[in-house]
Length: 202
Image (spheres, rainbow, N blue to C red):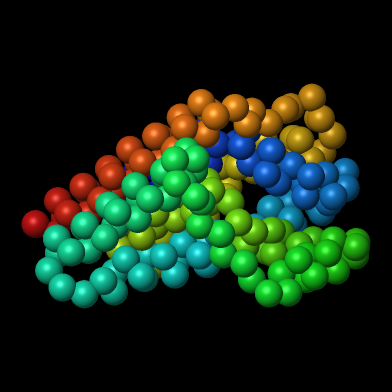
């Protein structure tokens, strides 16, 4: 469990500038109140944890010998990392009605709506999230997957919260080499988790 959580948290921490570029405007939409910002982060992290649990369970349910699960996990990690690097098209899962739900929640000022807004944001297409979900799949465990993705979400909080609370001088670095460096980090972390899981099985 520790390798997966560490790898996901590191991906979130190092990928924070990318997160500012992707979600910075949503953080700003929450206004300058700390309670609203924290509610938004809580909703987003909740969604990440749920996705991580589903990804971990999917990794655990791969049938066949142990090497099959290892091979599938490796392919997914490499594919997601390649998508983040821009080498292959990023997977884009579109959820009907998601934009409408997020817009409705964003126009309301109560904490429940801020939480719902964050939860909806967590479902928006994001290459870094997809790549980190590869770590959850590689863990092969729903609880570990949920903990890893929760750690990923929490690791992005400092940069996004600071940005959302008014420090607008932070700028997102969207240069290609940055995305590739992030992809390499997630690739190495994901393969490390795959190796750790395989070692435990034997």
